Length: 488
Image (tube, rainbow, N blue to C red):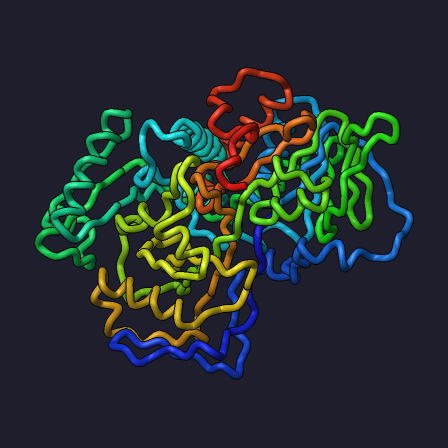
């Protein structure tokens, strides 16, 4: 399930303070969201899943349909799972969601497929490498079809990525990361401030700064990628192998009256039977959804939490020239969570109480739009736009790009604000696997800010699990069994 809706109005309680990099807004007006037209007409208010049990509609006759696999969630993870099943197996698939694609975390991201912030040997490393390979293969396939190729149909750009540091201590860390990535087979180079200036003349890191450069890193546009995947999935509808049901929240699991085994999913309007598997790919809502599906079960309380983020998108921004995707080194520290055996502490525990972290990320997409981020905070499922956070994002970017200090930014003019809830896991890795004692019910969630990057590898993994295949990536780091005792 796509994890959150776009916000629709500013929060008047957060007025921006004065600054050399000024940010202004008219609080009496609704913010304009320049979402691409194909999605504008499909965007709707999401019904929070925590309210489902109290807002269930009056019982009505539900239409029933039979499929091999039912996927709950039409974010990039759920749609990619459906795609992989359709392309690589003879199975039929139904996808259901409470809203529509790209109204949640998928549509609120920055679109980078980067290895610069990955750590070789970590639990997610193999999955990240495999998923990047699958995205590369998809882009090559789309290029072979003509008609604008991957750039036109995926928003594909091989910009390379720069992980930026500004102190001698950060440069030492970047040198270590460069060495580790190079040894793992990733093209990586550590750049001095002078070498970095040649690549990004408008970027300022001081005399002690520099960056790690990964020339093979790419970025895509989530809206275009989802559109392409939906078209692929939809092409199987005529064969009776694919059904999509949007704006129809899942309400409960359907069980056999005699054996108690899970047979399908009941939505507000349909009963979707799944002969082989039910896949819950509901992003930040997975925990609540499982609680509504299953009897209270302390051993299955998956601690996925919504981690709210803001991004600022400036349409056709010509005040700054950007040649690569950029991320400050601090982003890695803000993203990485504690190990599964360590209680939540430090930044994570502060964030649980609402503390805000801001890290500079900057990309330019194929349309010439500048995308600036990013924020992280635990605010439940709030969708309110916080103007003070947007100002922090702008000011942080201006520290790295001094040109922005002289730019007056009117938030109502040619801007898009993206708000999403990343599905955060305390141990920093997704949950991908069968529910204990319910072998035909699988979970795929907890990718936090890496849903797009890890989607295709996750889809392949889930398909292998359903078919009983050994898999190209080790399943065990992502298993549910015996994983969450530290968070009870």
